[in-house]
Image 1 (tube, rainbow, N blue to C red):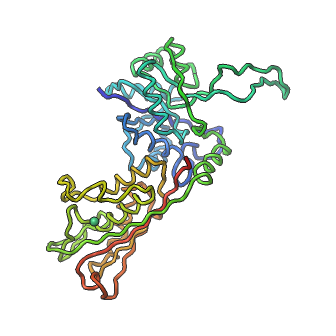
Image 2 (cartoon, rainbow, N blue to C red; image 1 turned 30 degrees about the vertical axis):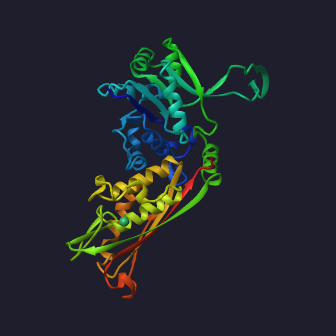
Image 3 (cartoon, helix red, strand yellow; image 1 turned 45 degrees about the vertical axis):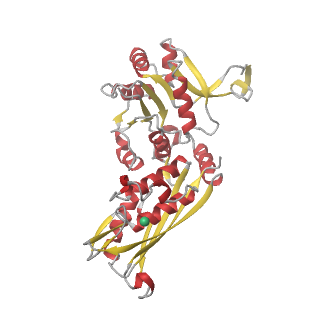
Length: 384
Ligand code: MG
């Protein structure tokens, strides 16, 4: 039985936002709003799968936002948020998860700690809502005048992801379908389930208005820090009939020697990414003495480094590689190499640079004894 599946609700058309593009697909620090949430949830070790609920009109936006991420096929939502969640829950019938986390696609700043808190509380309670206590004094107002001051004691602002035992919340949603309740905790409450409150986070905002989007940009961009990492690697030539560079097999009259596939360019890039978060070097993570990494595709190393960057709260801004060799010629393969790296790192092609140079016959590269590669990576990381 699957332990936990995250349901990400993104079927809203964002009428409140006015613009043509629904808010969950708007750009936030170089990535769609929803992608930030998808990354946080798919990276969490206690989440086994992620089911997106979308509007079929947004299929293209969604595909772009989820590119390269391990998410299940999206299912179509309904007329209301509540109906969308119901459809999403139904789609998990066969998977029969023990637990579900239900998250709004327009909350990009969900973090690993909040997910863990919510899941931990589910051990005790059938429902869990992360929430923040209300600190401002509350007024009820009509026609521009205060009619009442509302006692704020005991009032909380509900956030997502909200956690439930699957069978419970499925039954509750079936029973109370069609009521347009605005969150799943409300559905659970209707069904008489106890819903525990855990700490939410002030940063876990829902992007509803243009102002929210600006605030989110400030939180990531203005409030964040740019980091740069540098990588360098060399592999010598040996007998063979091709080299792998940037994940692309290039026919040649020699091969590169190494414990893995000897992709010197991806090794340099992996080190550059590790460098942005002070996470050591490729040898620390994948010792050449370890048989598991013999002949392995170096994509594995790069993906791991990228996942560490994400786990540290980073978003890759761009990467740039220079391959240094007399031969083989890199130019004819450059576009494919860029596409390959862009796919692995879920970047667009204009965020990836691949260049090549010779050393005019000088030095070990000039003598064609091997290939060297340099890489630089820039990330944006949230201030903690
Ligand atoms: Mg190497």
